[in-house]
Length: 280
Image (cartoon, rainbow, N blue to C red):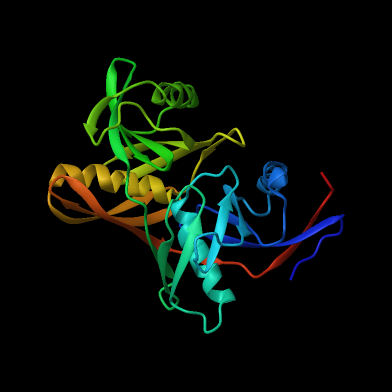
């Protein structure tokens, strides 16, 4: 294990789910310190991390729980945590039940050690809406905790991204469900979609962080839901090529409703690393 020498000490493990580098903090960090601890870890260039999650005691009877740095939901963190949790449990099981901030129910993660892959059950979307912006309408898929807006074509600049994020909070027309505007969320994503190629950008409210992610699990799920609804009944699987790798997402449709969502892809996990930081 690596060790540094300052004052506040805890352990981390670093996961790489298709390039969406996630740091898991294993020590007991008070919630009021999540934001500064996450900001410090994200600034450490040796990890190239895009997000931080804190392991905390489960609340709903699952085998483990993580709290994302801004209270958001993250699919890549979910499946990576499933892999990590499996290594902590007796017998290193291939199936674990996890809790994640932003998800109202525990989720099942399946681990394929030989293939270096993890697949997770995903929360069902609460609905889809259309976002009027700059003379066009963009489709958004809303999950508990995060709203993803799909933009066809090549990635655009940061000014476009920030203006569209602001527009997402405006009222939209109903596509299905009872939504008339995006629900309150801890994070917002924009997914530039060009064929099977996707470039994700995520804004996390509590940490005021805008990150062009290497891959995005919940964003991949949003695209799969959007495309599957267009194709009708049945289970539809999609492979989405992102800057950090490929994520596979599947959505099952029955009578115009999403009844099942799953997402998976490669995951690697570091050994335990000891981190020490100045007190906050």
